Amino acid sequence: MRELAVSKKDIENVTKALAECLNKEYKGQSVIFIGVLNGCFMFFSDLMKQIELDCEIDFISVKSYSNNKQVTFELIKNITLNIKDKVVILIDDVFDSGATKEAITGLLGVKNPREIKWCFLLAKNHQPTPDCWIGVTLHQNWFVYGYGLDNNGKDRNLQEIYYDDNED
Image (cartoon, rainbow, N blue to C red; front, top):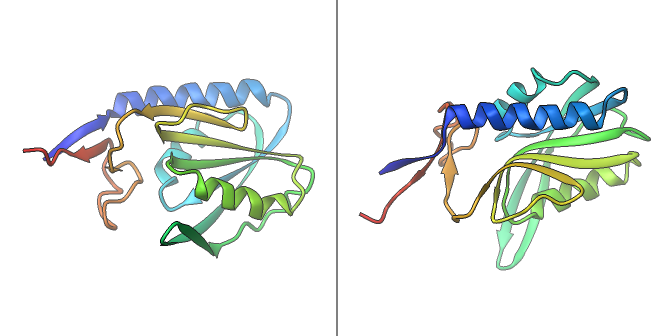
């Protein structure tokens, strides 16, 4: 049975709070925001509408493959902007294991940005670190979907975030 994990109102409040943090921290600076596709698209759009900074926008997409305990990444879409000596903030839907964050940070790090930071809508049992902002920390290990996050390719269009309660 579908259960609500994060309401539309909570998403709006968290997105506003994250935008305020970014606007305050980078006031007067030029920033490049990079969305991590596909899951970020709704959060990215809503967040960018509240950003008051001089900025450019780009997107990156990777696909991960898990083989036993090793994760391999395939670059699907790379960024097109020059990020050398620039402040780069990656926007993603959910921080889970950290493998995607690590892989993309490494991939972009060779392009010599001045700074790379991350902004996540959700995190599973992870607290913010100096290189990332987190909107909502889920203390359960739910598989979540909706608001850009997919459920086997579906449900990205839902306006709230859900999980399935299969303990019936």
